[in-house]
Image (cartoon, rainbow, N blue to C red; front, top):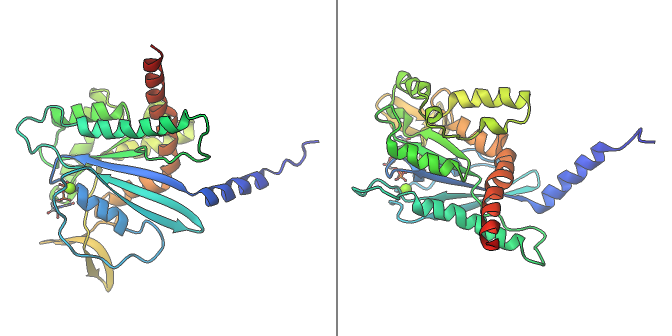
Length: 294
Ligand code: GDP
Ligand code: MG
């Protein structure tokens, strides 16, 4: 009777549905001011996110970020629309007292959960609830000290409880390869039980574990950001000019920006969305509904 179910037809239906609905994906950058967060937002959009030809580069100075601010680009590939939003945050660390510097960021993340929740509990719900929840939060670690500061640990500890945190070593071009390696050898995050993305608890099967172990070894990614293009061997590449030459941000031999980008918007995009919905949003929802039942 069930000799032919037609799984392929089901897959095709799912594909068509996704194509029609499109999807939303939201990233946030967090860290001390001056670590290259705003530059990284531009790097993400200017790098080859889609196969479309890159936009002509605007070479303007990045102003200091003074408030939370989101940039959205709609990227279309093979008929599917992805609405990619990156939220830039003002850096902390400008004040002498950094106590509670995470408050505005935590508040923003929770506000997006709250918005989603309010739509979800309506009697007549939208067929597709607008999703502004933060699916991935890139945390910038200063490239100095070779050790996570108490402030970074505390910030990431709080963040990792409510959102997927992807730590990166900022401005990795200012470190030698040995220094980058030394950074990764440190087990600070583990020692402080801070569970960054991809969390070991959520590996789904041995294959998943194997793939994610390889990623976990590389975390924090040593990234370099740039929003200017340079000529290298007759090609225009995104890069930073230094006295040793041009550091190409999209070249995996030069830095790990490509790994970060691939993790976020290629290999793990759906997983970041799933964990956001099934774990982080779910615990927000339970907490909120318990509160209001009291
Ligand atoms: P934000 O305060 O974290 O948003 O930092 P910005 O993006 O405004 O960058 C601060 C300064 O650092 C600017 O002069 C950037 O050109 C520079 N910068 C950004 N990314 C990098 C990087 O990867 N390496 C180096 N060496 N400098 C960077
Ligand atoms: Mg900024």
